[in-house]
Length: 228
Image 1: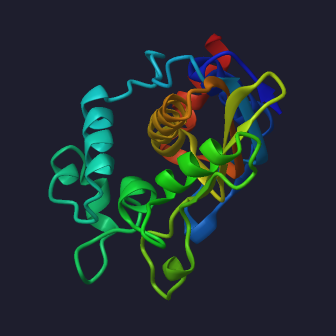
Image 2: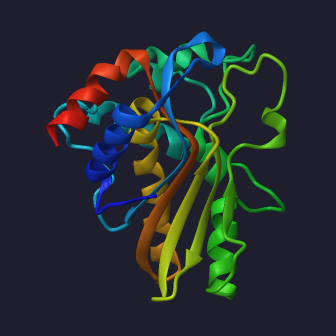
């Protein structure tokens, strides 16, 4: 359990835990350091953008990813201009599964998006426990899937202070390339749902069954862990 004010503090604390007590595992043959069942809580009103100099977050890529998510386009023609990462994840149709905007705001179920479902449920009953966006879905379970969606779900729920909390559940989360760019999207939806339902933003909570870093980032993690 890591309770902090903002995402910079979260990165620091996770790096410390990974450096000092992370377990080395090698899924698919790639060496990683891992924390299992990592739970992070921070203020949902704080900026979700990492500014630690050691991380060197790409603001241009982050902004492009948010634009791409909002477009809901499963093709990578736009986003690959900012990162070649996605080129290795496309299927035979040259599309990917992990455009979170497509899953949350574009795809329709019974005539509405999952985002609209959450907003409607909270408007009908602000104490509902049904305001959930499912990201990893049954159709993603097929052989040789290069892009098995990392996020399980995102839930919006009213807390005891009558503020809207958000909980994101991840099956797997790379701290550097995943968490760093994922949180701004989830925070965007958190604030949007709060605005649409006339509720105050509460806590942002992030649970990852596996929070990890790959070998190429071990030095970065060590620098952050020892500096702060």
